[in-house]
Image 1 (cartoon, rainbow, N blue to C red):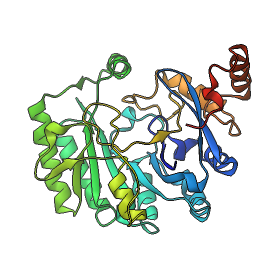
Image 2 (cartoon, one colour):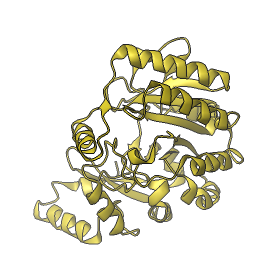
Image 3 (cartoon, rainbow, N blue to C red):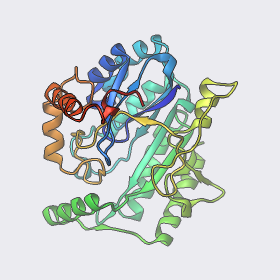
Length: 320
């Protein structure tokens, strides 16, 4: 059965793993590991088995020269492009906003506004990124992106366990206090940002924050079956919602990324336990590997485990 493939919530494949991804397309399949149960699966990436790729990135520039090849292979796709304009101290090795804006505009010269979601995500409130910072920052970004996108997705930083620990470490090292704002603060800021977005012809959507919904702020579907239908399947296609967390509106998909592999080093990242581990895995990754961030030695070990268990754990060899 064809599937929507997420590329990827768990790491930045377009920015750092484009060669690995192209090798997976060439072979027609990829492996992924369930981050909770650790089961291992294969998923077909043959064009007839992929409804759509949903690309997520803070930097699509490294993927730009590969998109024509991907298109010519018969794949359909759209983009979730994160541009926050936050001070660099929060986003480690991420490219600056000027490069991101230029790259988004380059995408817009080839693809329609409907193909590109701008993500102003996450919103971090701190000593140096307060309410007024976000009003001014968002106005600058929205004015630059006017005419190139028609949707902006927002959310506030989620204090997962590892994110909370990283924030505490960041505060201790940098003396910058990060604040978890109350609901009233969030609603007021979101509505002001929505007014700014509207003035630039951009619709505002809220990711996993239904308390922000209003006549000017709709519920986000970052992986959006209805958008995919509109872009590629005017006659309709089979899809259904499968939230990944509370108040998520996403359509069911398979994510082929791996946690702890993104070297951007963003302080707010939920996908990395440790920045140093992520950098090391990126530096040592094998672009020929079936599983992103894992080596041939890992695969050989897994196969031996399957054999020792009399193939009871056959998920390694099964298509999901």
